[in-house]
Image (cartoon, rainbow, N blue to C red; front, side, top):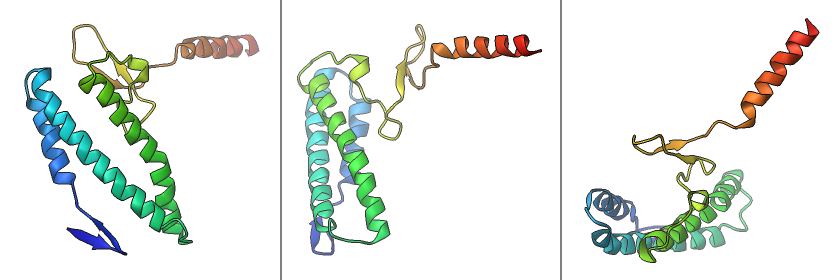
Length: 145
């Protein structure tokens, strides 16, 4: 157990990492369900620690604390969205549309890219209007010259 500034907490990083790896290497969705339950429980506990720390630091006027609070305000809803998405997809067996899925905590705007029979990739799809913009720009250059 670690503590600081009157806040007691447990570092669940190792346990979460173990569950994530077990999920990755476990065959069959039914075998993964208990592991997801455990991982989601660990994540809820970590979010509870985060809420406690944010509440204790709410009145601090330190620039570093303010930066941390801004990061918390950005990341917490994303983590909660991932939990909800996992509960819907894995625990409830619901088919979650790709447009509803958050595939990266660090790049929330990343998309799921499926290219034929190859592995699924995650990244950024090129904008459909990009070609039109390039063409328009090229036509403008031609018109000017």
